[in-house]
Amino acid sequence: MTFWAAAAAVGAILIAVFLAGLAPAGALLRSRSPGRAERAGWSLLLGAALLALQTALGLLFGFAPGWIPFLIVAVLAALVSLAGRQRTRDPEPPGTSGDTAGRRWRWIWTAAVVAGIALYSLRALTEPMWSNDFLAIWGLKGKVMYLARTFPSRLLPDSLYGFSHPEYPLGLPLCFAGLASLLGRWDDHALALLFPALQIATLCVLFGWLRRREVSSAVAATAAALLAWFEPLYSGFLTGLAEVPLAAALLLFGTAYSDSLEGETRARSRLAAASLLAGLLKNEGIFLAAAGGVAAALRRRWTIAAAALIPAIAAAAVGRLASHGAPLRDFDSVFFGPRARELPARVGETLRAALAEPGLWGWAALGCLVLLFLAGRRMPFADRLLVLTGVCFAVYLVVPVFAVRGPSWLVQTTLARTSAALAPLVAAGLAGRFRSL
Amino acid sequence: MSPRRRMAVGAAAALALLLAWRALEDPVARRVRSVTAFATRELAVRRLGGSSAAFDRRYFIFLESVRRKLPPRTAGVVIATPAPGDPALYLAAYTLAPVPVALSPARVPREWLLAVYGVGRPPGWNVISEFPGGALLAPAPS
Image 1 (cartoon, chains in turn cyan, green):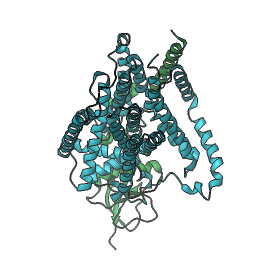
Image 2 (cartoon, rainbow over the protein chains, first blue to last red; image 1 turned 120 degrees about the horizontal axis):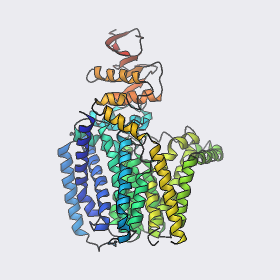
Image 3 (cartoon, rainbow over the protein chains, first blue to last red; image 1 turned 90 degrees about the horizontal axis):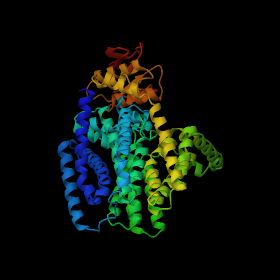
Image 4 (cartoon, chains in turn red, orange; image 1 turned 45 degrees about the vertical axis):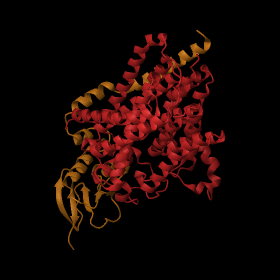
């Protein structure tokens, strides 16, 4: 099969995945005009979650994942969603009817967003997914689950496959295996189309949420355009890895968290769904859920804390079961005990490596973000996202201190890309501060 | 225009320029040529021409040959290569998945096959198949 034919088939499958997510997204978000783009983004991500779910069920109960199980799961999800939608009839959320001044520029922003998506699609689809982490971790597990119809921990001996990080969550590999089961073959070139689709979903959520929060269309579209061109996240290297889907899940979590604190009833369901997605994708998702949960608990918003924390913890527990309790391989608790004396030196090494990491381009870009922060006004609904981002970044800075292969190694190999996955949260937080400007 | 607004527009414009500079540093024209040149070729050929095989393209040809010659229900494959390393291990594990793979271990597990990258053929093993870059071997009956 040529690449074009396979990519067209995967494109059609992604449309089906999007349609499968429409009903659950409709139960979580109203379809009112300002939030329509947001609902479209949620639809693709929830559809992808349903796809991963049918694959996991197939592996657990011994049936072949494919179109029929996917349709059954999608129909059941739609029925549950419709029932849920009838039960919760909350008032219409606030929204903007549209600003005429912004509309004049809309075509420019739209062109910029489309160009950003086109460039990322080109980077993602130039060749079959190729990064070491795709071959060794995410793609390897997806291929094993699709071809052997079993969980990787049941087939690949831990003693030989420690490099595949058996302790990592299986959300993305399940999604790969699910897409391959609908395609009918393992095609690691065409499957890369998932990543531009996730980029589009992220941009939709960002734009839609900002518009629903009464940010002008010009500001919302500028944020989406800048994010679409953010190559440190939307790169060929990160295509096939968990950062792009995680970035989308973190944005869902952050926006739902902020909406929950504003008192929106359905936002808690969205928060729980986003927490589950984030926890199923990467351990960093659990950090964010923990940060949100603790912050809500400190404000005595117990139901919000539960919605933020419990699904991510459940996802982590399922991951532990699926990996037979594999330990975290990159970290060692020995630095809490016998080697605690090394900690100050390791903290210093981490900070030195982190300061050297951004380079001239990175520092200039960070400078622009600081200016944008200062130019905006205090907006609690947006500032919460920046606080969550700051907490996550602080955790990413602390974690290398405990790295088995040394702080510098972990900082150099992971800090830039894990931080890049926070970009949608930063874009939403900074743009939200311009609501009244 | 208020100073805040001026600062916001300036910072956003500078950020846009930085992002555009970085995104357009990428060889866009070369990517387009690569996609159009390889799109009609089979998937393995596309990987052969890509980044994951760039460290040793003959090694990927060898792995792909091993994959095509593996008997059904193979328990595992040991790859003997003169240059073992992480890229060689990851590419072998991925290409041969779901069959378990080990790279030049001290001992070959029972019932596993041996794939030798290069010309050497260790004693005590029967050649199942020879192909460009190496051979697939099974333990000789004792």
